[in-house]
Image: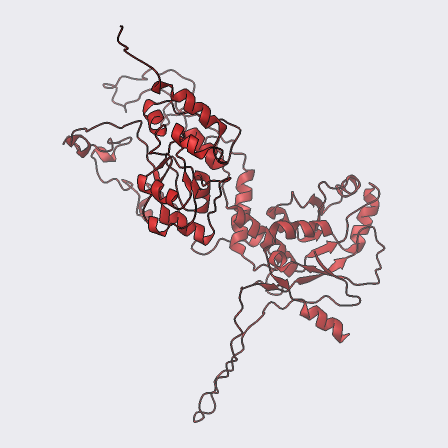
Length: 243
Length: 285
């Protein structure tokens, strides 16, 4: 520490950088003493020594580049979904530690799982898997995007409830951010509607599931309406033979 | 602000070495005697490493309005995490460079060969003239041509981590305290806007070459008017003051509110305050 006796006051005139913190810039083409004069590190003649000598990255001098050697393959499925898996034993562990809690009024959603650190990235939605089902002891109320059959079985054996809900990307963001002013969209694709209408998947559009849940706190009014509207295909008749 | 009123006490210089374990050097004279090292028992383990700080003390300067002769001598206890920070000149250097970079106008401009007025006509034929080959007349090789790689208007400002800037402020304030060039006043009110009286008061208090930093949102109008024409004296608010001003001005005078502002915005958390030196001094009176 500077003592006032030995040095004049710390002012703008006596500041200096930390030793070794600044490094001189390499300046080429500035004379022999700098070791980078003359040809400035480019050697003699040749394409690379010319100004603007930019050879296209990946060019191999005419030889077929490695990026062109192998044929293209396949396509990218735009409808592919990547589910963020979470096993039952992990959820149970989190509950034991007090990092997660759930009740019929406040089921576990993507938001709780993300913020408690159970899941690190939501991807396209959460899928509950049944690894470690023997360790599950508490009643869980959870609304993931998907759930495996063993997970469903294990949760319901303990007295909990799983309802698989459809989340499009916007709905997922709203769930994570805790926004409730927007209405989450209904599924539009036939595959999604079919999937979420099945009781075996515990889909939120399944009439059997809604009947079973009755007036549980986490059931939304809208599900019943959607289940009716999106389930009309069951009663529709096509290609009825004209008698 | 940590405040204590201690009547008739001189300014205390702070010792900064706390909690050092003293070891006796082995005896060099007794070659036959065994080496004796007395190492005291280690302190009992604590559950949390809570920091105990000793405040740094500065004498309270009389306010501008008060009469010059003041019977009591008051001490101001300052937060040592702000006003007794280890001096880091390299941090000050970084902060000053960052500040001065931000001041640069960066408006130097030159015309390149594309911007110089002129046509693209080839000046002389490629071959046959016996002289060097030339294209248009705006090439940087030629007189009247454009500048090659000349300056263009650009932004010279640099980024510095927020915490480095905050440490710089702490170091600057601490350096002022260390040099005994920091004073604290209760208030900086001034009744009228007359420069004459304030100038006389400042000279009599010996506060030339001083920057007055008030903790108010704005400098009071009367003070502003009275002080603005006095040479070698400046005034600013604690929100607007930067590290450049703190280092430029030889002496700094703070408001009580300004001290609170700095302690709140720059202070680091501590568990408890240890003011035993002051209490011992009081008990010795």
